[in-house]
Length: 342
Image 1 (cartoon, rainbow, N blue to C red):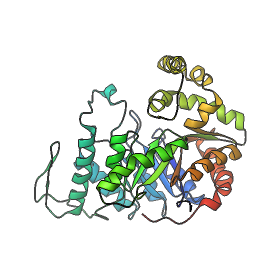
Image 2: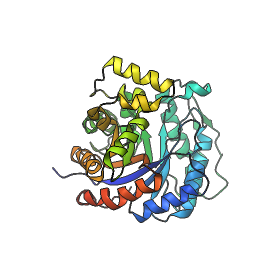
Image 3: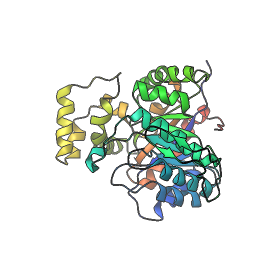
Image 4: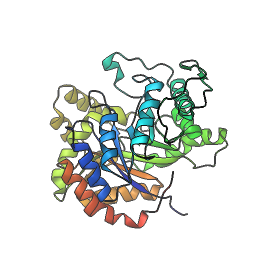
């Protein structure tokens, strides 16, 4: 069985000062990464600011948010920001969309997620098509004759949906170019997701396996492997409670998960991280020395993943993490690499 084309990306958090995003993206491009994403987590910078800075500093890498959500941004705003990024990057933007999490903290409900997601996709592409047809949905409306009043680079930048559950995955299988399973480095999720995408691909008359699968997780790599794994434990602790409950292939003792949640809620991420055993850490983060991280990535490649996103913080420092990934990890994975066009 031939393996699918494999790409490598970076996931950057919106916690940096102006000027850092473009600089880091240019380093990523120099090391031949294919994609740079910016997270859209609550209380961090909205991704459009880092992404526009990255667009000005790069010429090749694809750029996009991971991900916008339909509850905090109206599809009109999503369409406008997507079009602006695509224009600024000369056609290198992707359209990242997910239902989002933790939105209750800012008073946002998340009703009818499948309806919201599907309508936002159609609304955005209708508006970018600039044909004036309008859109009439249950949740959103675009009046006939309304079209953008600035140049549009592409009417349909490729769609990446952040999904986990069977229903959202089936929806993605019918409309998305790519899906991202965020917060996991578990190779078992590739086959699970392929099964979940299949009903949607079938309904839409798409070829089985047409939807590309992306996995991404917290990454901490360094020549000092133990130091990297120690930092990864702290970083993973806050995400573990959310992501672990979504993975049907992993069983975590309830008492362990409860203790991690309690310590995170108290702000003691170090203590929470120390509770995470090695085998569990390897399912939810890429961590250790270059050989360890490359071995984890290779398991995903062998499972059939299309792209691996090495997520923030990448290393003991941002620069050093990207450098170690580019200089030491990617060369170990070079045989899996092939050209990809979306």
